[in-house]
Image 1 (tube, rainbow over the protein chains, first blue to last red):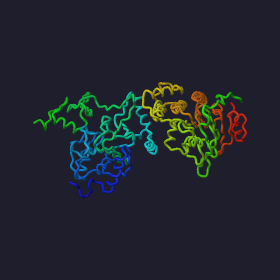
Image 2: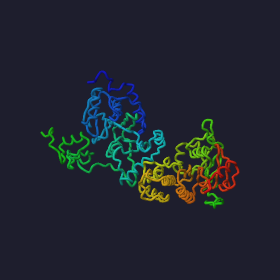
Image 3: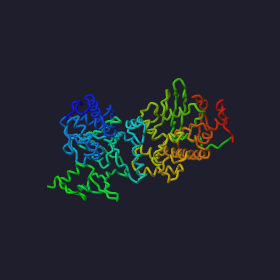
Image 4: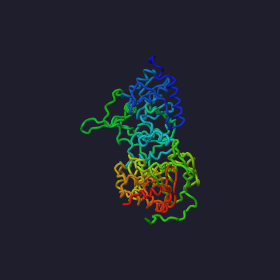
Length: 292
Length: 271
């Protein structure tokens, strides 16, 4: 039930209007970080205050919301945000990617391909891809303005010089439509290819840093690399131990203190659906709900 | 006090016309004068020294020429590769920043200002290459190793950070980082400041070799007369923001005309 003390989706209409303007500007200039007047939200910074505000500005009463935290639907962050919108917006929620119209995510893109009817909202801790190389905000803005992105490759050079390969595994920088270099939020680089040419609208909200940026549908996002060290969307070289999927991103779970471990899909919805469809991995228990 | 000039003067320039033409540069800090009425031409392959005491405006002048400060009056014409003589004061900022990554180089007095201390030596040298579009790791690394060798830094230090280097090595690394894109004009602000004399001598020797080998033009700001004696073809003496004397280095140092230059030359300790 909607709590009558709150406006629909918590934020007041003026604030949502301001955020929608920032979103529209972000969509008009793919990859450009649009400043917006981020509000205090009833959760700590780092818990997705930016994503929540973008979601609040996008939600309509007919929407069905899914919230992902590191691929999972059942972790604290996901459960809290889902409950927050159930209470303040009264919208329907789901854990199934295919059924959702708005998906707020932290650190993953769902394995199930998205469609043109969906909006994917990312929670972004640090929107500036050049931040750790150039601490001055005035200078990074100038670098974006003048397309001076050589420094981004210095970071990749350092990776190769130190580790023999590009060791950046998450928040892997992409160049959007040959113009802005963008931080795709801390998604694993395995997910980077899904950024490009995606039919869904992808919105990025950074609450503490007060920035919104966006990838409109079917936007090209190229992962930066070197000619002789090309980009590689890496994942653990295993099938999922529960559902047997070969091509999904995996979490490593330590199961005992004698070196025992298992690899499971990080996308819990994807894994559950596969098990429901009868797929089984190395350590799969019989799937009770569908055993009959 | 006669010295053999290290670089043969009077070699005819390959291009007819100066590389850099400075016309009436003035920079004020409020009512105070930073530098005023400075005009000179710098020819390809020529090294110009600017000397003067602290506060005489030499660093202000250098920063105006290199585009770090916007002068209040005057023109700085640079002979660009594609557009001929262009005023760098009024040119668009992207073009000026491109110049400063390609045809220009700036060596800071303190290497910490000119290096990225958190990035390895190889990354520091490679940055300018990557900034102008190099995207081949092997090529960038080979260029970095080549340049480290040319500034006498051992190849096994290529992955060390500059913070692990001595002051002299940091300064040599800064020079390598600046020269890797083959600039035509180098600005140097006290390149030997803060180094002990034996390291200074080695650095000067290196600079002299590089300048001659690459046919660089350079503007060197210093208060060390020995540095200009060794490196510079011509000399400008500044006092209170104005040029008080200019001429061939040996001529100015051996036969100073202006009272301040006489004071400056006679103040050098003879060991």
